[in-house]
Every structure is written in structure tokens, then in C-alpha cells.
Length: 592
Image 1 (spheres, rainbow, N blue to C red):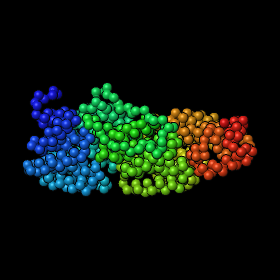
Image 2: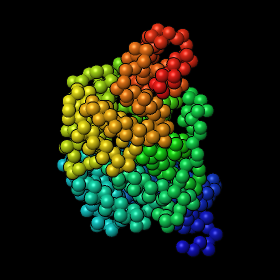
Image 3: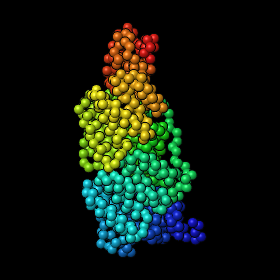
Image 4: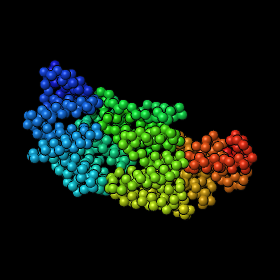
């Protein structure tokens, strides 16, 4: 589109807005609006509000929209006033002002509900569907989305039709109708990938689709659309889909974790969107962090989390919370427990319950009681109807792990059974849920010394490998090694341990790598020297590899007090008085 020839800044701003060159439109209208004698129409104030939002000036956006509403009202334009009221509801809700948001939603209904059918009523229908779905009234929610679809088809708006498809898909997924919901979501995303939609609706649909995919445990779609979203967000950004050659938004290199100050890890930063950049980028990047975490790209995931927390707009703080939480998970599994605690704390500050990660952190710190209490409370908070299937599945998986650690076999068995029921109740096969359930069932069978542990564990391993999720696959290999040893197959056990150790080392999962190494060294059935028990030999191997009492406690999931007791027994049995002497004994007797 060629640039306008007029010198009128308002006309030039309108043209820039039509091209979705929001920074240009904002500068022109912002400068023009500084002069009181130069009045702006209601439509021009709406353009100023839109361009201010895209340019990262959320407060100015709200102020301009308030003026636009007054101007529409003065002109007796109820459609314009109604749509502006709805946008004020949306912006106030994002800014954490529910009372103001409720007031403007009431005004939007007052302006629009008694009018003949019009496109603006689509937004009221979308909000009605969200409210009904939140109360578990799926029938009313579906009716609202279908009214939205009828209005969108009548006015011929691709934007509104795509939003209607997405809204209906969300209701269907919440109602457990997975296949229908994903089919509608795919249809809406076709319009996104074809470049048929405005920048605002494109950004909305990417963010909503990524949330829906992870909540529904559809990992394959999450990976595909996360990559597409980051391409769309990549600079230079014009508001339209990329030509396929855009930068994919690769994050800067992660800082060296060995030199970081845990107290400053992922510290909160001012969340501002530089003028001219895509304000959806931080939200999409926060979704990408969760995908990278599962794929085992942990260094990049943590770096992307840092970047997302810099880019997320102030009206999307839940995305920053998700990035902090995912970074905490990475740090916890790498053995950086203090940094993980800081990240989980930031997530909590921004409104996210940091579970089950925090419970697993407490378990690694030897605080089993806190781990049990934390995961149980989080599960109790999800007793109401909840469309976040993956969130509940992860809590149940963690509940199984925590229960096994404290030798609560009945509790572990119940959590595993609930997880299996959740996976079985899904409409169609869901590989991620199935892999979580098989892992939990196999670990419980192994703890109960039942002969049937190998079958679910082998299914779990196949599932994680198919999903290309390396950490969970390596954890299952550790369980398989124990099952193989129990069955007398030492060679198979060592193969699984060796593979798991290699994966843990590549990921930087230090405690798990040490545990795998200790188990590899303890695989022999020969008599241990010095009268050591098998557990004392494990502790000694970890001492010899340089582990502190805290490291050993985390690797073996025991308390530091228990580690100290084992060390006292080891020193007494071996007749040594220091860790150095004990290490020398371990090397001399082939324990390392």
C-alpha cells in the first residue's frame, strides 16, 4: 500500500492504522492531540487508543478510549459507544480492576443489547460464553458461541468468525468434547496462518490456542503453533503473518548458572513493550518456555523466560508468572534449588500457585511434610470443574511421586489410579496424559514389588520417546532399571542406567546424573567392602564424586540429617576420619 500524499497528520494516521503501522499512527495522533484546538473525532480517538495499546502505552489507551466513548455518546452512536465500552471492560480486566471492568461490561450491554443484530454484539456473546463456561453451564455457553457465529456470518467478518470458532472450541474442550473442539480450533487457526485476520485477532488466537493446547495436553499442536507464533512476533513486525524467512525469536544466551546469584535469579523487571514492537511477543514467548522445557532445551528455556519477563505487557502478568514457574522447574531439576525457590516465589507474587513444582522442590530439600501438604492443597483447589486437564494430571503425577518418597503406598496408588482415570476419560488418545499415567502406574507397581511393573513402564518410555520429551523418558529408564534388577536382568538394568545418565548429563540434571552414576556403580551383586550396606555405598560414591551433604540428600531424596548419620557409620566401618580418606578408600576398592 502506497503512503498517502496528504500532509494532514490525522489522515496519515488513519492510513498508518489501516496498514497496522501502529507506532507511526500513535506518534502522529499523539502529537496532534497535544493541541486542544485540534479536536479528534470519536473514530480517531479509537484509533489513538488502539495505537497506544500496540505501542505499549496502556494507560494512554484507556484514557483515549474513555474520551472516545464520551464522543460516541454525544453523537448518539450506541454501536460505537457499545464497542468502546466492551474494549474498556477488556482493558480494565487485564489491568486487574474487576469493578471497573464489570461496570463497563454493563454499559456495553446497555448500549448494544436492544439494538438490531450487529457485529458489535459478537463481543457480548463471546463474554457470555466465557461466563457460562466458567460456571460449568456448557449448554448456555454453546448457545452464546453459536449466536456469535451467526452474527459473524451475517456481517461477513473473518475476524469475528475466527473468534467465534475459537470460542466454541474452548467451550467444547471444557465440556470434554475434545475431537470437536480441536477440529474447530484448527479451522480458526487456518485463518491465522493464511493471513486473513487483523493483527489483534491474530495475536489473540495465537495466545488462546497455545493456552488451550497445553491445557488439553495436546503437545504436538502446542509445538507447531508456538513456533508459528514466534515467527509472527519476530521483528521487523508489521502486524501480518511472516513470509517464512523471519527471525524465529531465538533468545540470547543463558547466563552461566554456576556464577549466578540465586537471590537475583529471574528478578522482576519493568515490563514494557518498546514502541513499534509486537506486544504479543512476550505472551507467546512465555508459552514457548513451557514447550522448550518439555523438549529438554533447558538453557534456551531459561533464557527465553528472562526475555519473556521483560516483554510481557502489564495487562498480561499471568504470562510472566508462567515464565517464572517454568524457569523454576528447570532450575529445580538442575539442582539449583535456591534459584528455583526464587523463581517460584516470583510466580506466586504474580498470582500463580507454583505447584506442583514447589512441592517437588521441598521434596528435594528433604522437607517431605511440606511437599505432601503443598501438593494436597493444590489438588483440593482443583476439585471444581476444570478444563486444565494437563494441570491436574501434573499434580496427580507429583502426588504419586511425593507419596512414594514418604512410603505412603496407598496414597500413591490412589493418585496413580486417578491419573489413569483422567487419561482414560479423555475423548480420544492423548499421548502426554497416557505417558504420565503409565509412569505413575509403573512406579507404584515397582514400589509394591508387583511383577507387573515392567509393562506400564515400557509403555511410558515409548510414549515419552514418541513425544520427544527426554527428561521424563530418562526418569522412566531409572525405574525400568530398578524393575530389571528386581527381575535379575542386570545387563538390561545397566543399559537403562547408562542411557539415563547420558541424558541427565546432557540436560544438566546434576542430581539425577549423580544418582544414575551411583546406581551404575552399585549394580554388582558382589559383597561390598568394609561391611557397607548398599545405601552406605551409594552415599560413599556420591561423596567421592564431590557431592556435599545437601547434594547427596537431594540425589537420594533423604534428609541431610540422614546423610550425616550414614557418613558417621561409613567413617566408623572404614576406620577413616575425613571425606578425603573415605574417597580414597572408595577408589581403592573399586566403588567409584
